[in-house]
Length: 179
Image 1 (spheres, rainbow, N blue to C red):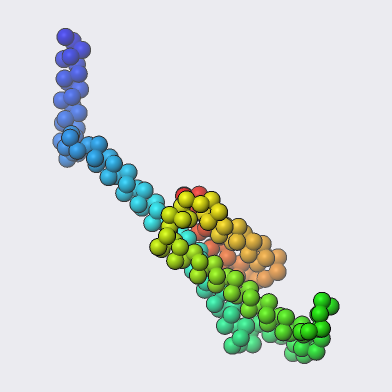
Image 2 (image 1 turned 120 degrees about the vertical axis):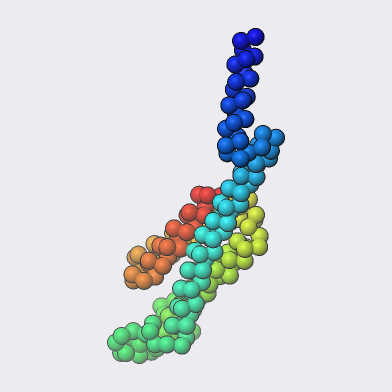
């Protein structure tokens, strides 16, 4: 009898607490399920935003690099005699091209690689996110790409691409660990 009285008091306190919080006792499991779905939805959107942001950074830098390669002299050597020397000699690998043509081609293909990351991951994150979510490969591939480019930027390039790639890689890592 005492335990019944005690459980009735607990039920009454629970009812008052739920009333104070404006919860209906019968809807409690449903609201908990809805909150859980909302949290998952927010987490998924945040992950999508991180992937899109990281891929967008890659796309921006790749596009700028391609523009600099073909439409400006920003990637030309400062000393014009170096450019002339590059145009006048071939690679040890083959005489079918010059060092200058190889330089332009390497820069262009490098740009296209960065742009491909954006062209692949932005639509995938927007319209087929479950592919990324359900695949370790598609979850961690942008992290691997980002870390690879980050290594190259640190070792061979300069500050601006390094910082951009670092930001993109942080986005990719943040997305991967939340999936």
